[in-house]
Image (cartoon, rainbow over all chains, first blue to last red; front, side, top):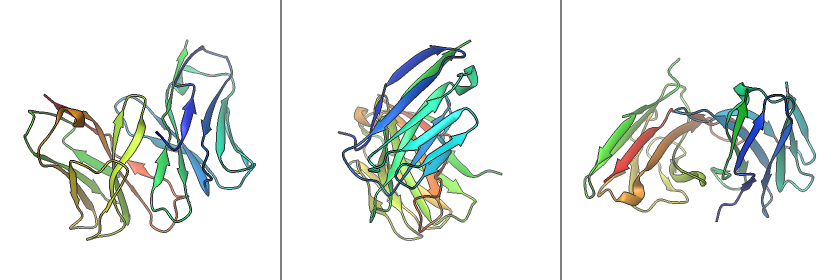
Length: 111
Length: 114
């Protein structure tokens, strides 16, 4: 089983709609990152959140780190076709040398 | 800027064959990682290295070996390929000391084992 579970696994929406994807765990993380991956390419970092309850905005994307640092969400406002991709969360744990990646949410925005 | 370069991009092997995947980074990063990506599984860590001459096991190390003889290169070897190793393999690198820093990924190697 994965340490970080993401939901939904697949999401297909119309251009202009809003959406939220979730990243959940029973473990505590010292920080959490969100990546976006496009077909044929590697993941690219979108944001890092480090404080429980932290909210970060990146244009139409809003990221939140849960108060207990066990979960995170990504909200996209007025989705555009360019938002299409695989969204991955990744958590860092104290004492570990590596990130733990989530299962991913594949988003398709239909024009 | 090259960043992280993986070779080859595609490869088809027969069961039992061996091969080596090469990862090269030009950012002087200390940490390097090998992941495999399978549908519905996200990225799973195979092996990683925290510096030249060091390697460590990740989540799914069985059937793979790695070497980090030079700081800029991280090699992933399959000694006897199995169909279960069919996957897309990603290499990544990052600055040492802080997992708050981004991991920089290559574009992947798509490997099929027949």
